[in-house]
Image (cartoon, rainbow, N blue to C red):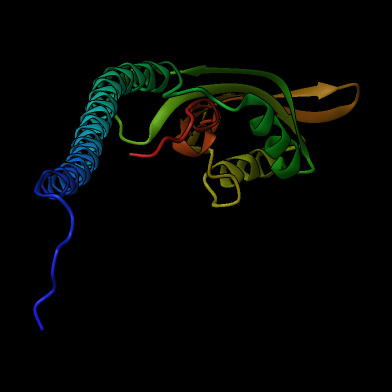
Length: 206
């Protein structure tokens, strides 16, 4: 059975108009909400891009600082190598005199004693391994005792000195005891050089 509308036509039209207006308002609100969501999303994307740009700038600055640091380290290494060369040149033939005298007291023959000692380092020499010369004055009880000094100088027990020879010798006496006074020369070898050059050069990583 078909429904019968008893309302006046004007009321029906007003009702239909209000219904359409309500629908339009609802659509408008939905559209505004959609615009807000889109704007928020776009703002988030823009913020993400800005964050990436900031991070990239910071990374670029860090890289540049590392490059600058490497350039400085190259200058430091050049300066370090120059200092090492100067130290090595200054201490190339730095004789360890204290160690030399301690060894001398240990190896000198019982029947020989020194009356003088003079040692000098050679700044530049033509003989490989020779870094200086020593001249000693000594006294022995006889000539065989004097020869033991030469055997000690040329032996492996005292590698700091080698190539000894007697430049002069003469018989003398101490009171009534006959003795032999002699002069001897020898070469200072590389083993007599101190280790100060290694102690003064710090190790650095390459």
